[in-house]
Image 1: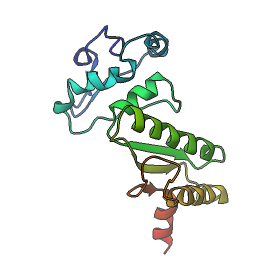
Image 2: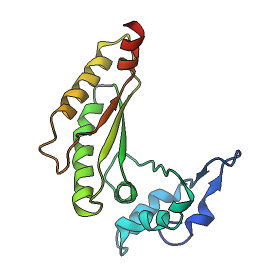
Image 3: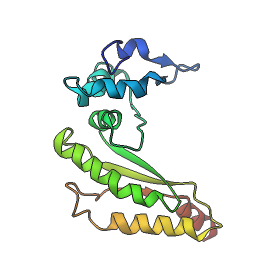
Image 4: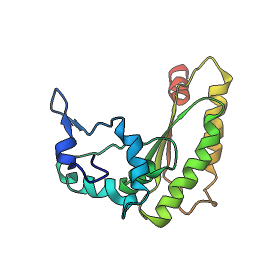
Length: 171
C-alpha cells in the first residue's frame, strides 16, 4: 500500500482506457491503513511525498477524501493545494461545513500553510424545494462573513449552485 510505504505510487496507478487520465484506486485495505499509520513517523505527509514523486507528470491531481478528520483526510489536505467542497442541498449538510472549514484551518496552520478552500459546490439542488434555496442562502451567508474565526480568508471563494444557473435560465 502506498501510504504504508509497501508500494510505489507509480506501481499503484492505473491508466484509464483512453489514456487521458490515471487513477490510484483505493481498496478495502485503506481503512486498515489508517490504523496502521497511527504510530508511523511522518504519518501526515505520506500521501504528499508519494504524489510529489509524480506531480510533474500531471496538470491536475484530484484527491477524494472522506468527510472526517482521520489520518486519510489529513494526508489528503496536507498534499492538496486547494480544497473544493461539495455540499448537498440538504438540512444536515450545513452542520458539517463549519467543522470542515475548521479542519482545513487546522491543517493549514500546522501542516500545509498554503491550503485554503477555493470552491464550494452545492449539489443535489432541487428547484422544486425551498430547502435547496435555503441551504444555498445559508452557505452564501456563511462565506460572506469573512471567516474571522478562521486563520485564512475566504475572499476569493467561489460558490457554485444550480440555483444560480436556474435563475439565469428563468431571467
